[in-house]
Image (cartoon, rainbow, N blue to C red):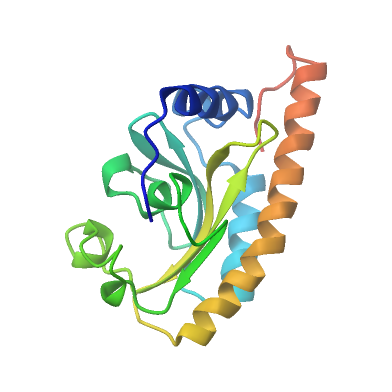
Length: 187
């Protein structure tokens, strides 16, 4: 995984995050129930312990929705595995590993080392918005390692589910653009 250092890219990406109502300043205090349904489906169909929709907003990873047991949270972008994915993953738009502690790009991440969590199995699909820039990820994980085949199977589930999620976000954004005075981006 490599980093992207393009201020123009980041400005376009942040504008897109805001246009979707996913920026930290745009978010209601409570989790988005509609988006949480996507996270719950991801967890159920992958058989993982946790699932979430994370957006990278400025210097933060914002967990905008999660399946039960994965609390909505805010963490530094510098610690975010999802940020690593959206800022130039050489693995494409979907990434999976059966044991993050053995993955060269993830083994020193604080979510893997125990500093912030004990993540082992991880799969994430990058969510690419209308402006063709990444907004964040739909990801699943477990505290126990899995086989690489099981991790790949989870990634196979996330690919079409992430496309359905983007379609939902696009429809919600379009409705807001048609009626900006309406209820903004609430589930």
